[in-house]
Length: 142
Image: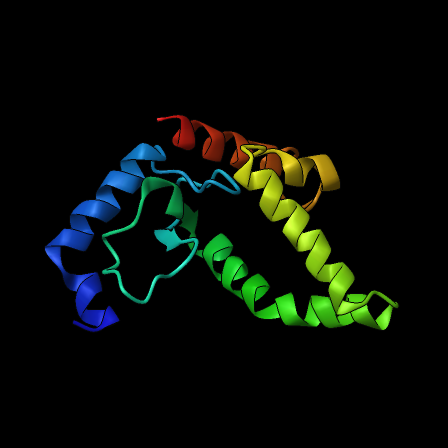
């Protein structure tokens, strides 16, 4: 079953509704509850159907934040290039990412806000990164 067929599946529709309800029908980044909401997969596993993901791997996003999330994913290589153009080696960048990965593995859901603070995107309500980390932390506790 391809992706488009999976989206139409009753299994996905049920799973999608569960996630929307869990997130109180609000975008988990900007808090929007008026515009169209999407359930976003934070990661894709090629061997899973789209409804076979853990709760913490799915997040409710408004269309604008969902689009922005995909744009950011596409720009990661550009950001790596930018860091390298300022003199950081690939080894240093890898070490930074590994440090974040280890912090998450050890249960520090707030390691990103500890690094960048709460004012990452000024056009969005202050503290949204902390709110996302709190959400992730609560989901992992369940």
